[in-house]
Amino acid sequence: MRRRRALGLLSSVPLAAVLGSAGCSREQPYQLIEGATMGTRYHIRFRPPSRSFDVAALQAAVDARLEALNASLSTYRPDSLITAFNDAPVDQAVPVDADFERMLELSRQVHRASGGAFDPTVGALVNLWGFGWPKPKEPLTRLPEPAAIEAAKGRFEAVVQPAPGQLLKRAPLRLDFSAIAKGYGVDLIAEVVRSQGIEHFMVEIGGEVATRGQGPAGGPWRIGIEAPDPSVTGRILARVHLREGALATSGNYRNFFELEGRRFSHVIDPVSGYPVAQPPVSVSVIAPNVALADAWATAFMVLDEAQGLALAEENQLAVFWVYEDNEGRRTRQSSRMAPYLDAAP
Ligand code: ADP
Ligand code: MG
Image 1 (spheres, rainbow, N blue to C red):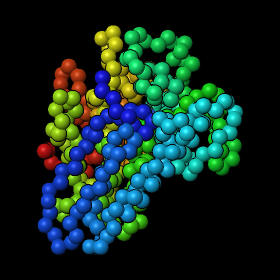
Image 2: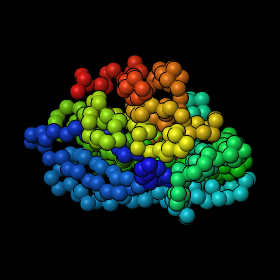
Image 3: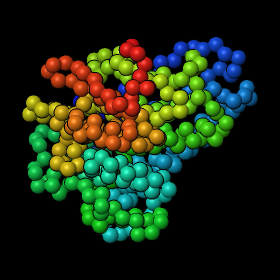
Image 4: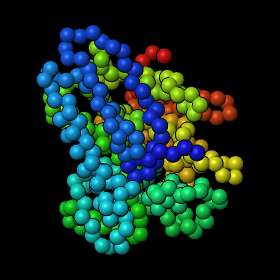
């Protein structure tokens, strides 16, 4: 079992890699900024608008924005707003900030549209199944009791806002935004980057990606979806091209545990309370923003193949699934995906 920390909890290794090729241009050369956040790394590739552009100031602005987000939403931090909410008793209002409210609103949108497959009130289940923070010292040696699973189930309808800037729970539950926070963080960084006059950029946190303008080779940004093989990294299975785009990938192949001969995913079916039994090995989603793409990618790990395809079409999402079973690997895509895919790599 391999684990990495995400904002609150865990994250799989990035599934997407930028396929950059050096371009020759009379414009400013592309630059790269990177740093640590949410238990993984962020990368910003961009063309500075002028020769005198202050790269250090951009990075400082990005780091400050990410720090504010983590102070709100990190379940690792004892002093974050989300920890205060999670530890508060039922019916006690807790202050929340604008990021918290926005993330909740986006989460509710995907929760409803996905028939409950995406649900940030899975926090107690995530802990029960050993994917929480602090990380258990030992992997689970037996399955949780059905009564404990039932008690840990989330209830999104019990999260209510008595007034702007306030939040309370009507029943015991714990919030966990790990499945949307990296995507939301990418959207925030993209805003900071654009506000500094940058027209051509790609922002990425742990495989969740926003793009705008042109890539270093001159055309659209080209992003590879890696073959989901834990022993091989960097094998490209498909390539997408994006101009102004938002792409997120959820993967099951590096973040799971095995018990009694079964494999347990870090993605939990909020309805049954159990880790998803046979999720796709990966799902990539293109959506109007990266937060939505990220949340939907997690929802598609929960939904079965027929439900997933139907909801992708209904919600006009471009989705690319990779499945693996005894018969080998196969991919599937929604109708909106075709315009983004390059010819077979
Ligand atoms: P990754 O962090 O690997 O990119 P995801 O975006 O799919 O993956 O987020 C998975 C994390 O989200 C889990 O580790 C858990 O903390 C939380 N989670 C698990 N199941 C759900 C669910 N059904 N809805 C919302 N969040 C979930
Ligand atoms: Mg996600």
